[in-house]
Each structure stands twice: as structure tokens, then as C-alpha cells.
Image (tube, rainbow, N blue to C red; front, side, top):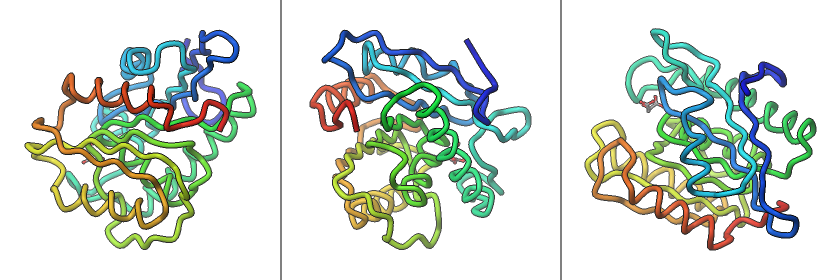
Length: 215
Ligand code: MLT
């Protein structure tokens, strides 16, 4: 069910794993034009039984929901991004208290991956880890400074992605690693869209238990 509580329109699906076998909750962050229902099937596929929290991006671009404004493709309104990353971190804190869940692992695609990366840099305590699908560097001049000590991050880029420059994804991987995150960055023979390999790799990364359930 979609609800408008806690500051962002969202869906919450409680986990079904039995006691002692709980997995870290997933925060699902859709791409441009998606909504809170978009990534639920992916979440169920990569982490069966996990609690799912899925907000809708609060910004509209020609009627398409996004998590922050952009000036052109790949050119972000950094002031808005800054504000929206804090808004997302506040939403996660409110949802943790309201639903009684631990720090989630962010699973973001495209625009959702970019807001997840920005939130990690500005509010590093928000996520237990993150799987970023087709992300890019969210801020043009970000310095390493966030304390992401040991946070696991999986980054999956597409070698044929026409939207994300290779140097931008590599720059993000480098920045997160210099901030202390345990980054695994892979380039897949794919474009900007998701492939079966993305699903398999996220599933395996989560199953390896890189992220503790009660973070
Ligand atoms: C963004 O705007 O976050 C990226 O360009 C990806 C996209 O949403 O197209």
C-alpha cells in the first residue's frame, strides 16, 4: 500500500524471513520516471524475505518523478541535490523509528543510485551499505571526508552506457573508497538499462552477507 506519511510518498513491505534469518532492509530508489512500485519486484528477487522500503522521488521533470532536479542530462542542480539528499536521510531516519527497522542497504538505479551516492557522502550514517546500479559522480567537486568506514558498496556500470561517462563512475568509486567504503566496482557489457547480470550480481553480493542484518 502506498502512504504519504513520513515526508515522502512510499511503500513499505515488512520482511517475511523467520526469526534469526532476517536480512538487512532494502531502501529501493527508482530511476527517472519510475515510482515507489517500480523496484519492488527487483527487491523481492535479490533479497527474498527482506523488508522493503520504497519512496517516490519528490521532484517532477515533465511529469516524471525524480529524486532531485537537473539542469540537463548529467548536469545536476547541486543545491537541490544537497537539499534532497538530506530530505531522503531524514525520511530514512523517520521510517526506521516508525517501522522499527535497522539501517537499510540502498538499492538504487540511475537517478536513484545518484541520490543514494549523494546521501552517503552527506549523511554517511544513513545506509548500512549500497548497491548502486549505473551511478555517476553526484557532485562535480566532492572531497573525500565522509566517514564510510567499512560500508560495503557494490557499483555496477555499463560499458556501453550512453548516459554515464566512464570517468564519472570511476571517480565515484574512487571517492567512496577514499572515504573508507569497501567498494566493489564492476563494468558489465551493458548499456544504461539493467540486465540479468545486474540481478545476479546484486543477489550474490547481498547473499555473501557483506551487510549485517542488524546494522
Ligand atoms: C540523473 O539525472 O540522475 C542521471 O542522468 C540518470 C538519469 O536519471 O537519467
